[in-house]
Amino acid sequence: MNDGRFSGLHRRGFLAATTGAATALALTGCGGSGDTAAPDGAPRRGGRLRAAFAGGGASETLDPHLASLFADAARAKALFDKLADYGADLSARPRLAERWEPNKTLDRWQVTLRKAVFHDGRPVTAADVLYSYRRIADPKQAFRAKASLEPIDLDASRATGERGIEFVLKRPTAEFLNVLAAFGAYVVPENATEFDDRPIGSGPFRFVSFAPGRSAVFRRFDDHWDGAPLLDEIEFVVAGEESARVNALLGGQVEYAHELNPTTARAHERGGQIEIVRLRNSAMQAFCMKTDRAPFDDRRVREAFFLIADRQELVDGALSGAGEVGNDLFGKGYEYYAADLPQRTQDLDRARALLKQAGAENLKVTLDTSAVAAGFTEAAGIFRDQAAKAGVTIDVRMGSKDSYWSDILDGGTLCCYRSGAMPVEAHISQRLLTDSTTNATKWRHKDFDALYRQAQSTRDRTERAAVYGRMQRRLYTEGGFLVWGFADWIIGTARSLRGVETKAPANTLDWARFDRVWLA
Image (cartoon, rainbow, N blue to C red; front, side, top):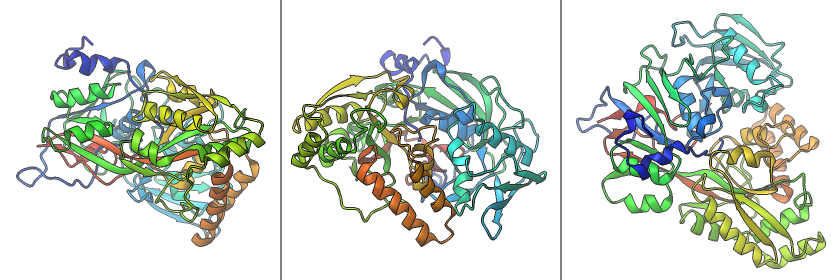
C-alpha cells in the first residue's frame, strides 16, 4: 500500500488489507440508539470515522443490488435506502415507505413514500422504486433480493402518483413488509446502471471516492430524510486479515474493527485500550451439504452427518464458547423458529448404521473451508476428527478468502457456511427455494416451494406458523444445512467512538449504522 492516507498502518496490520477477504452473506456494526454517551453527555458533530472490514478484493462493487459481503452491506446502507428494514427483533420497520395498506385479500398493497431526496437533489419517486425492483428481478441477473421480490407482479404494479405505488402481488402475501425489507432491495435512481464511479443514492452519506479492495470514502448528506449524520465522513478500509484489523485499531489507524475472533476479544475485553462489543448469537454457523450430488443426494448420508456432529465441542473449540449450539435450523430465537423439535446430539452408532444402509461405509469427502470467517478453519478440523470416529474420512481443503463465497455456492459437496440475521421467512426465500439465487445446499423441491407460498398467503399468524413449522420439520429431517451453532458477533472500537449499538444482530437496521455514531 503506497496510498499516503494509510501510511501510518504498519506492514502486518495493513498490507494484508490489499488481499481483501470476503465475509458471509448475508452481515454487523454500529447502531442507532447508542448505549454510551460523550463525556459531556451529548453527541458531538464532526470528524472522520475509519472502519475496517474484510472485503472482496479488486472485484468489489458499490452496486447495492450485488451486495453480499458484510463490507458491501455496510457501504450500501451508507449510500442507499430501502423501503423498510429489519429491527433488532427482526420485524420490518419503515424507512423510505411512510405508510402501507393492503386490500382485504392481501394481494394488493398501497405504499406511500416519505419525502426524501437523492444526493443530487432529485426527489425519490415511485418510478425510482419500480425501476429498482424491476432491475433486481431481471431474469438475466442474479441479484440477491430477486427471490424475495418474487411475490410482486412488477408488470402489473404501478405508480399512483409521485410518491404512491400500488404493488400487485401474484398471490396473497400477509408479510409483505418482509419483502420490502429484503436484504439487497435498495432503491436507486431510475435508469441508474453504473455505481462504482459516482453512485447516487438517498442514504445518509454521499459518495467521495472508491478504490475496490482498498477503501471507500463517503461524506455526510445534510438533506437526508432521517437527519444528517453526526460524522463529517466515513472511510471504509479493507483489511482482509483479522490481525490487520486488530492491529490497525490498536495502533489508532481505525476506530472500528469489524469481526474479531473470540480469542482476540477475550485478550482485550478488560485491557481498557479498546472496547469490545458482542452482538449475541448473531451468526448461524453451519456445514452446507449439496443435496443434488453424491454422497449427499442420499438423505441417509445427510442424517448420518447430522448425528456425527458434537455441537457443543464445535462451539467450544471453533467459537471459544462465544455462542450456543444449533439444531440444524436457521433463526434460533426468531419468530416462527421451530423450538419444539428435540435437540439433536451426537450418535455415532446410528450414524454408522445409516452410512452402511446407504452403501457409504468408509466414505471419503472433501470439506471446503477458508480463513474467510472466524472459526471456519477450526470448525473444519474439529468436524474432521468427529467424522473419523464414524469411519468417515474428511479431506479439508482451504479456499481463497477473496473468492470463497462464490466458489462454494455451486462447487464442491460440503463446505463451511454462515449467515447473519434475517427472518426465518427471508432465509427460506433467499436460500431454500428452487429459484433462490443463493441456494447453497441445492435444496430444490416444488412441494416445499408450494408450502412457502401457502405460508405467505395465510392471514392468521398461528396457522402461518404451523406451515412454517411443517417446512422446518422437513429441513430438520432431511435438509442440507447442518447448523451446529450460533456465534456472537464481535466488534472492536476505539474508546473515542460512541453510539455503537450493542443489541442489533448482524443484518438488521441498526447494524453498521454509522449515521448514528460520533467521535468523542
